[in-house]
Length: 174
Image 1: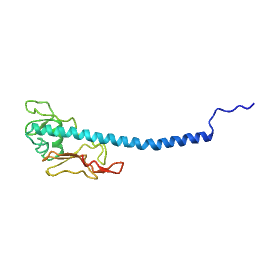
Image 2: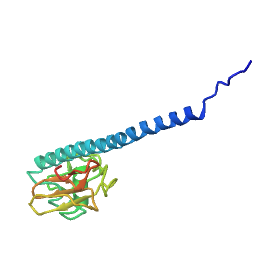
Image 3: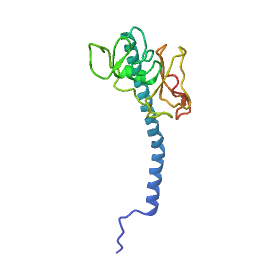
Image 4: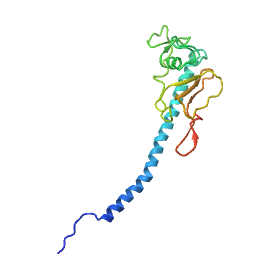
């Protein structure tokens, strides 16, 4: 009487490995696209939040956008003036204070922080390239800063003109 071992044969193991490889080849690209879709959703949300903060700032400061005036420490047209005027308390002239003093600095803060870029060459960067051009902004193919802002028009964009994983040029339309 011969007793068969309950182990798998080499052919059965190879078939299972091939099936797992095929499943992985299908799943990995889908997972990477899901990450890109999440990053794109993050950009959309961040743009909406910052644009709302910019418009609220302008409404409370007589139609003047952040960084159009200095913040008391940094000059007009600088990223620091933009950042401080949106993330700190301000007065009517746009002077910023990190201390709560509603008598002298009754406005803001409008944001906790300026968000960082979730993708592109400036991924993880939250700096803003402030322009005073008054003309439409466009993203760069290889930006050094995550965002662009025009303190004349109030336009705020994601500073990246790139190509998505499906080969379509995008991101600049945001």
